[in-house]
Amino acid sequence: MIQFQNVSKKFGARLAVDDLSLNVPAGQIYGLLGHNGAGKSTAIGMMLGQVWPTCGTVRIRGHDVSERRRLALQKVGAIFETPAFYDYLSGWRNLEIFSSYTAPTPPRRLEETLEWVGLKGREHSKVRTYSHGMRTRLALAQALLPQPELLILDEPGDGLDPEGIAELRETILRLHREMGLTILLSSHLLTEVEQLCTRIAVLNQGRMVFEGSLAETKRREKWIRLRTDDFVLAARDLLAARLITGQQEGLLLALGEGVGTDQIVKFLVEQGRAVYEIACAEETLEQFYLNLMSGGQPSRRKT
Image 1 (cartoon, one colour):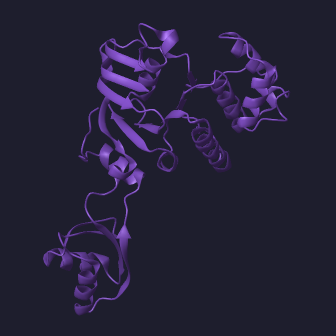
Image 2 (image 1 turned 45 degrees about the vertical axis):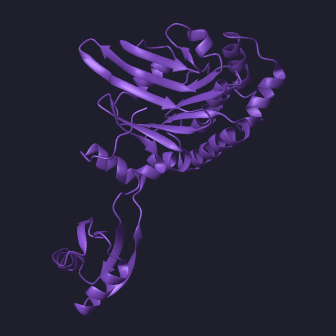
Image 3 (image 1 turned 90 degrees about the vertical axis):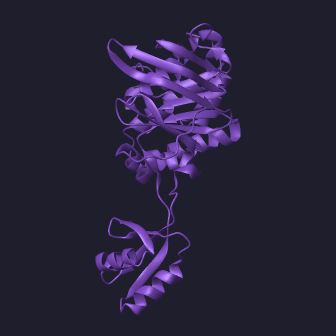
């Protein structure tokens, strides 16, 4: 659905995207992650034909965006940067105007789209009366008007309260499930990415530093969570006994090769230590991302 082949983009002397090769298969919810300035917005701009690559090829639905932009974007909807609306007009009238730039949209399609995003009943209210969440829903409605196969969402949850984020998440999942959309999602909300995406790419200073499934972001080592009467001393003794290879956060232990939790408990009890809790620990996407940004070296996949 989306393919980057050795794509770079320079703005003057600054290299915003550096030799990016990426493939987003059809039918997935795909996450694009990275800090501010990592190159995410530039990459999305190139997908939408708003930024031209310095070198390399960007293809959407098999079509080169630089050479056949209209055909490439014919079935693409997007929320990119901050959506702008005519505040003194209704949501309905805004959608009519925006759709007229490409092709007139019949009223039935407008009604259907507004119902999809949960704005039915407020479509004739002026946009100035809309909450931030309602504006986001209107932007989503605009992106859905062309009946897209690919939906590109750049920070769609930005500025939403927890309730709005949860509602947006359910809407995205429903669109994917019931409309079969391929969705590319750029977001700083890592817990949302973890709940939505099947695969992610992480950019850092314009380069891709990780690409893979959510399962591949989990710890390669076997970690456990331990609560005892003195974690620091327990970890020191376990390390000396070569039962663990490391510890983190005053709570987590990395087990040695072939070591089980039963051996940990047995050793600590024999040392006279109380064990209050011991359980397997799974790394969150947030922990994985922060480790990656601080210089961790997960396996890198190229497409």
